[in-house]
Image (cartoon, rainbow, N blue to C red; front, top):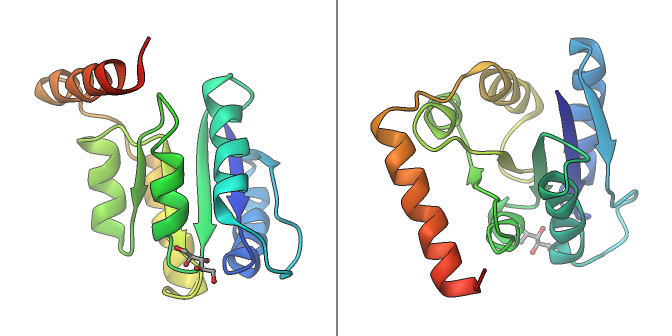
Length: 150
Ligand code: RB5
């Protein structure tokens, strides 16, 4: 599995922590930036990394801004992206079990490093349950088709 990483200045420090953690876990990643704490606009990085996922450069993504809110809203505008903002392990697990989330969003100014790592591990390891949830994911795709064309 290859992970697309994206952040803004508010998520930069936590992104660096998550990068080292992915290395520890032996998981490949592509870092779509940003690469410092200089102020930038989170939609630019959400868009680049989200396109990387839908184009097949990466399988899933971990996107981080100050709260995780802006970057998740931006990511969810890209067709095929199901981004879940998670502040705890339970939400991270459920975002995989029920929603087949392909992007995990974190708030770099909201959660600590150790919790973030636990969330990431749970999210990476939890499978999608399928079944009735498959039907609901298809309905989300239908909304995308009706609202965004194609
Ligand atoms: C940047 O100051 C901050 O607004 C951003 O990181 C994020 O929290 C937006 O949702």
